[in-house]
Length: 112
Length: 112
Image 1 (cartoon, rainbow over the protein chains, first blue to last red):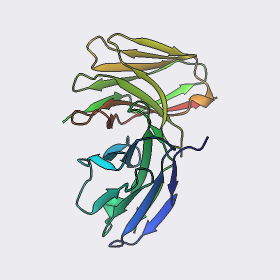
Image 2 (image 1 turned 120 degrees about the vertical axis):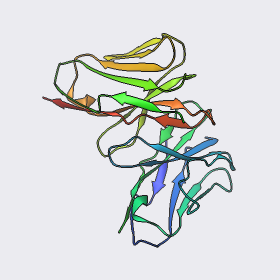
Image 3 (image 1 turned 90 degrees about the vertical axis):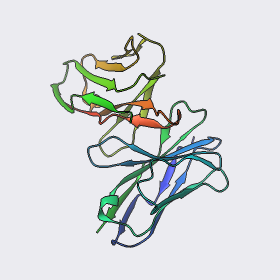
Image 4 (image 1 turned 45 degrees about the vertical axis):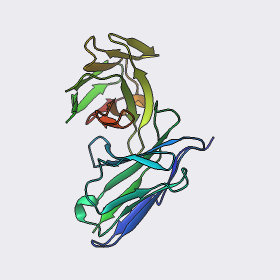
């Protein structure tokens, strides 16, 4: 069956631009997570949704980062006024019951 | 805050040699998960350990959870080139049980 999909796969943004990253979770998965992965590091938690409710956003690094999941399925991670330190791979994962997480291919964001 | 540490950071082996990576948490964990990330890929769930002292095997892979539930290990017997990748351990977050705190990973390369 279809896994988690993310778009775009690659995004180059000039510093100061806004970007929007999309995640399509596995159908029926109520939990959705966003992680940020820097080169050579493990994924770092950003935020977590259960259905449409954002239950934990403690990992968002600044108020420039915003995530939503209005209908409890597709989610969008928005970064405003991008900075060079935002360059990373942004991973989305979904989970059925808080057990194993299924990761998407990620969006590689490069801020120039 | 909670920290999950892994050693070694890198491991180079000849095909057929064994490999072990170790994971230590600063706090007691309710469970621990292991993921594998191939070069250029995304993390893929391998296993979850829940019980103190638990040992699970998947073919050539053996996973252990420490008695104090603060450490874990992954051992691969007779490595193959298909084992190449980065192995991450991850524990549930302190504030939200569903989020995962990942270690920095052990990058395994296998020389044929």
